[in-house]
Amino acid sequence: MAGAGRSSVLNRHAAVSRVLLRVLFLNLAVAGAKLVFGYATGAVSIISDGFHSLTDSASNVMGLIAARAAQKPPDEDHPYGHRKYETIAAGGIFVFLLIALIEVVRTAVRGLAGGPPAHVSSLSFIVMLGSLAVNLIVVRYESREAGRLGSELLMADAMHTKSDVLTSCAVLASLGAVKLGVPLLDPIGGLVIGAFIARTGWKVARDTSQVLSDRVALSEEDIRRVVMSVPQVVGCHHIRSRGSADHIFVDLHVWFHGDTTLHEAHRLSHVVKDRILSAHPQVADAIIHIEPPPNQLGTMNDDRGTQS
Image (tube, rainbow, N blue to C red; front, side, top):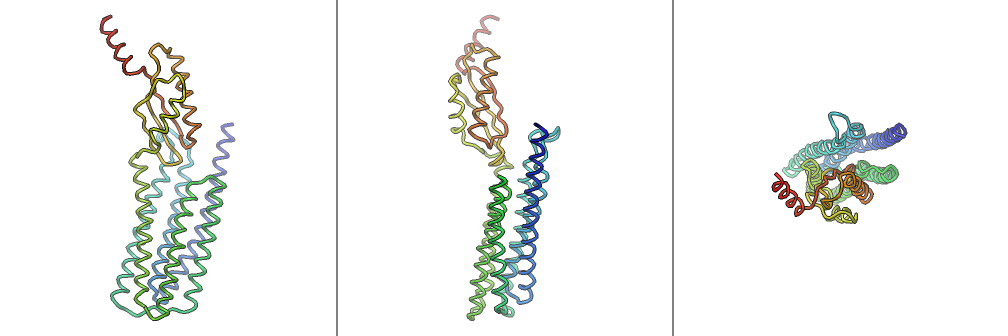
């Protein structure tokens, strides 16, 4: 059974990697077309969008690396598993977004400072409409595969690509303005794209830092509600949770009556754990510390003191 489970994990990993590879080639083709055509025509908005598309390719590469590392089972050096490699990969994506943002802003500012206007032709619109169509295909394909494979990584990557759809629309608006004789809107369009990239980067940085800093991953009240559904439980405290949205670790102290035998308390702790895992499938493991209620603990300590 363990071998079959391991095989299933590896098959899923291979399927996720295949999707990322296909999307990577499409994103590279789109980014290459935009950058080549943008530099050839001097269209700042197209160049900026090209760098934005390049970050999608970087995201795919980081996703491939993370998926390969994160699927490894726990070992002596990583007893909690390797899932945080996905978080580290997200940090890498933030770096690529930052580099793209710097280049986009630099190019846009240079356009605002002067220089020859962009040459906009029918081919400009064809290139952008073609890249927009590819982005829509990628989003639909990757979202469908994310649902089929239950992959949060693919879904996050699809959401990242969705931002390209918005920026491509901004580029088309900028090109239309240049065509109508308002070339200043081309570098302004580049700054708008820079704002989209900055917003995406901020979201990535925020989500990454929350996981790495062990921010609360599951509501304390939600956990308490499940724990108190076990009739023999008197109470609980010191409830803690950490991890990513789909891979959470929980630990807490559960109170049982002082006359409960160790064997029975141990059995009941497994009942509590099973209910937590059943109610919250995203929980990878739950550590239950068993103890008597605080008032009974004080009485027990007083009794020990009297006996001694």
